[in-house]
Image (cartoon, rainbow, N blue to C red; front, side):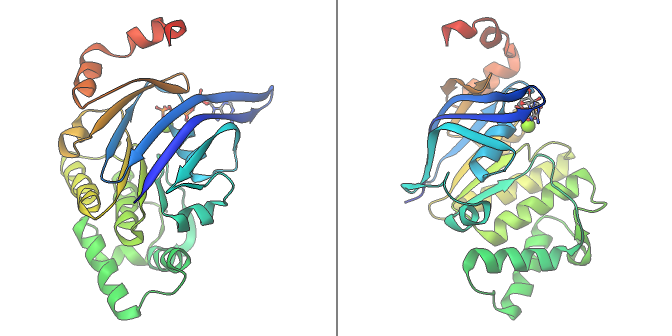
Length: 254
Ligand SMILES: Nc1ncnc2c1ncn2[C@@H]1O[C@H](COP(=O)(O)OP(=O)(O)OP(=O)(O)O)[C@@H](O)[C@H]1O
Ligand SMILES: [Mg+2]
């Protein structure tokens, strides 16, 4: 049973003026089969939360805990976290010149499974994952993210999600920069993942548009480094109509 439990997580980043606290007590539980959407103003710490869960070295966890299936993951390295079943689709995927998509995917799959995927089925799997995201099979020979359009980067992230098959996927603004067709294609990719047994999704977004395709079970408003309010999917519509004003004006009440 996959379950990601984040408890009172505090994280800071090193700046020229010393450490700056970005996450100020995040508490969130994602049970298997659940999709949680996080919405919040720019700079509120959403990506920091995603990176902190994934183990980015730039962020220091100062207190709190994150467990996956009861296992403390904060003590694990980035690759150990991936092997434990965590996946992060980054807001700004990094370019890896000289490493082809095919090699990258195969290396990642091998590292995560602990053995190399069988060549014949693997090539088929890769091609069908790319095809499902409307990416040409020649795409696999290109360097990872180098020269990819914004939409291609995001679709490539979802191809990874499909092939690497984690337990919990953290998707950081996977909808940004997508045209209308690509948004549908990416959403369908996420939904196929969600339909698999025991998966959890944490979807960070600014727009309710994607939530029409990927229906969240819960919506959280993220303000100033913590969850300010949680609700059902109606909360997203309320945010779209009203903005974040009421959360920004009354931080002391939280
Ligand atoms: N190295 C750094 N030095 C100083 N401040 C930093 C550093 N890294 C992150 N921050 C700050 O941390 C805050 C949270 O950033 P984060 O990227 O997590 O926000 P976000 O909620 O994802 O925003 P967006 O919606 O724009 O993606 C921002 O104010 C950002 O400037
Ligand atoms: Mg962000």
